[in-house]
Image (cartoon, rainbow, N blue to C red; front, side, top):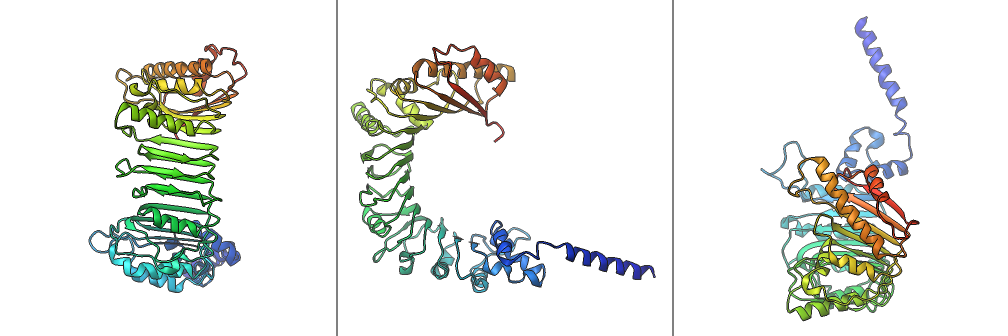
Length: 441
C-alpha cells in the first residue's frame, strides 16, 4: 500500500511538472530564438528532453560549429569529440531554409577537405552573417570555392585565416555586404581591389595583421564610412591609405610610417601606434608625425592611445609644430603617475581651441616603489590626477564636460570630488566633471 502510494505520488509529481512546463508549450519560433543564445552543441542536446524538443533545434537561425577539439590523448575527459563526421551529421539534420548567423571554426589541417562543403552548406541557406576562423592552417594550399565570392545575401563577413593567400580566381559579387573583417591573411593590393570592387554597399572594413598590403586605395568605395587597420609592428613595408569617403578611422598597433594620402571626409579617429615605430633620422620622424597630425586637424572626435601620447613626448619631437585642431570631443588613454604625464598632451590641448568634451581614461601604476600602504598610494594618485586636471583647466577655456575614468586605482568618487573642489578652475566653474571608477569592471 505504501509502495502504491509512492508510485501514485511520483505520477502526480511527473504530471504536475509536465503541466508546469510552460516553456515547451511555446511556439517553435520563440524556442528557436532562445536556443540561439547558447552554443549549438548544447542546443542539439535539447533534442533529448522529449519528443516535443526532438527537432526544435534543426531550424534555429543561428548555428555555431567548432571543429577545434583534438580527438585522442589531448581530448578532455568527458568532453564529446567534435570531428568532421559529427559536423557533417549536424549539417545533414539542420533543415533551416535560411540562416542568419553561421560561425565555423577549425584549426586542424585534416579538416581542409571538408571546409568547402561546410561553406557551401552555409551559402545554400542564404546566410547573412558569416564568420570563418581557420587560425592555425599556415598553408597556401587552401582556396575558397568560387561560390564563396558570389553571394547576394551576405551582409557581414569575418574571415580569419592564418597567413594563407586569399586570391579570388574570378570576379567578386557581394552585393549586400556591409561589414567585412579580414585577419591574418596574405593579401595583395590587387586581390583586395578585386574584392572591394564587388562590394558596392560596403560600410565598414577591418584589416587585422594583413601585413602584405602597401597601398590601401578605397577611393572607389563610396559607401565606406569606417576603416580599422591593425598592423603588426614587424610589417615589412609601409602603408599608404587613400580613403576620401571614410568618416571614422582607427589605426591600432600600426607601424610608422603610415601615410594618410587622402582622408578628406574624416570626422572621427583613434590612433595608437607601437612605441618603437619611429625609426630613421630625426628629420624623417618629425616630418612623418607632422604630416599625420595635419591630416587630423579637422577631426571632430579624436582618441589617442598611451603609446601615441608617449611618441608625441619624445625629445626629438618636442620641437614639432602642432596644427590647430578642430576637435570637439577628445579622449586620452594614458598612464598617470609621477613624472610621466606626457608633455605632448599639454601641447595638444593648447592647440585644441574648440574642445568641449574631454574624456580621460587612465590607469595608475600598481608597481610604484614606496606605495605599499593604500593610504600612501591614494595620496599619490590624488596628487597625480589633481596635477592632470589642473593642467586641463589651465589649457582649455572652452571645456563644457570632463569625464574621468580611472582603472586599477585607489581613488574613490568621494575623494575625487573633494580633490576637485580644491583645484583652481581658472574661470571654468561651469565645467561638468564626471568620475567613473572601473576597478571592478
